[in-house]
Length: 322
Ligand SMILES: [Zn+2]
Image (cartoon, rainbow, N blue to C red; front, side):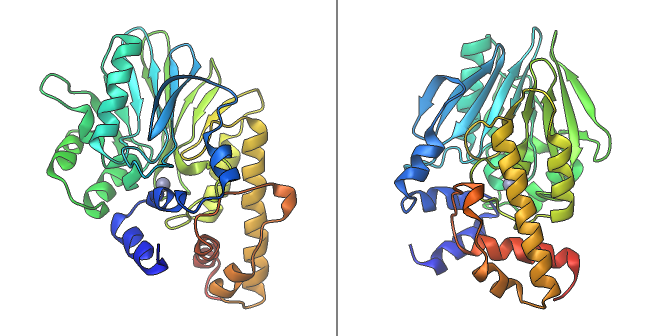
């Protein structure tokens, strides 16, 4: 695919991961294998666009694997069930993705989702949210006010049913954590910043599971298009737990602590390089071209060499002009 048309597509889509499906065709085989691998979880449903994996009793993660060009879902998400209520995480790229997950929730728990939370505004996480709503289904949708506004203002193509689905959303505080009692299971919803200006994580203590949204990309170099890198670094440190934890990333396979720490080290490496290049008055474009992750950090799926430049640009925005 010519670079220009891919860039035009990305500009139009407002998505942090729309490039995934486009890049899949040129992705090295080893990376595809890495992405699709499921070392930790039991797959309960499999579709061309992803696998639903059981993380624990009452907890499932949808790991999107858009390797075939099927764009129903591009981001990860999940289901958390309690005795009285069922939470669906993310609205996905298309309404069919949300309604598919909701149908699986009903098969697995006996209930259509009663609650939905969006982790941030990006199209691949939010654009399909109307798929949860039907004539008899009206789950309570939760998002921060900023996330809701950005979905409506920026995400394309504009869609009335999406706007309507968000109209009555319960607004999450941008500063204070809240919790959702599902019946014998409480999910904490914690406002964070860094991948975008408004992210939330969804966290369970027992079992120890963190749905990270796009604050964590497992073995994939993240998109810094809206990133605030110093705040991203702070959020990534805050999400890290000292005990054995399942980290569900926004993109990539389910992670354990070693995956999470490798990601944090990779972000540190980008920070060091950005600060060095900035101090040397290099342009973000030149610094991005010169940059390589050290082999000690392992393999990272890179969708475009421009992703490095985008990371440097995000750092320069915070550090001031070079
Ligand atoms: Zn994103």
